[in-house]
Image (cartoon, rainbow, N blue to C red; front, top):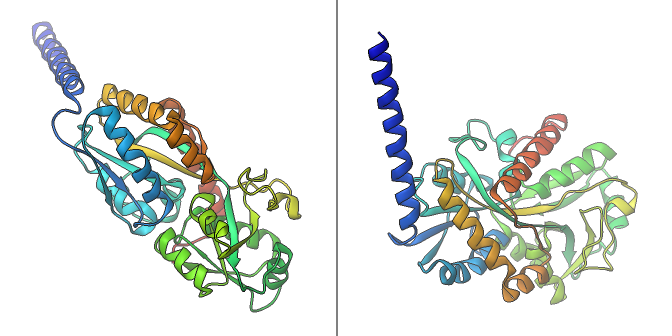
Length: 326
């Protein structure tokens, strides 16, 4: 029995060594084999798509390999995330996700993947306030007007990038806790939401500074309030929800790059280093900051802790407010 146990141990150690060598060789060759795919988990035009397409050309230059951005929207980003979770963990498929990734595990029943176990964080790109805005000709001149409408039986209708999005949850939380009647109108991403908001087809719209600010600059949308505890540097005259009578209210948007969970650590580290370098590029940093994104970066471990903390925070909100997907 001792001989058999020793043989099994030797075989196990040999297998582990071979696996380590094969992963090491894979990481050493990466990314020479084929183009790298960035799966943007929302449709074209929204902030996820814009972040992916901003990073791609600079990442391509940094890694010396073609970067392809593929949009795979639907189900608050979970369809694209599922595609990446099921992809080969070889460093050639990554997801660019939005804050909905931290909400989906508690909101969407029977996800075809485990958000904590099947995906790993490469880096958190950054965070941003969300903005509640209205079209130029709207009757809503201030956030106080929105609150007044929210106290009526008819309520105030607002659009978000989708059911279960952080904008949806933030408004639901605000309404539920304060007896305000906010009627949710879900869209399939930031692009479609902005199109209807500009046209006045939806009275209010909530989205990240990244996706809303260009339309504020063009005077087609009027900002009313931001969702973070501090004012946005890009919109210094726009008050926060916290300072508008709801002390402590804080709900930032965020973006991250993820990989299939079993991607070799050496590849994750190299991708992380490349992304951190790209985000420090003055052109990229200026563009992100101009659109309201506070760059975070950092290690994969710091990123994973951030994402899991967001999952914990919003799971509690979903449960306590009995929020369901539309």
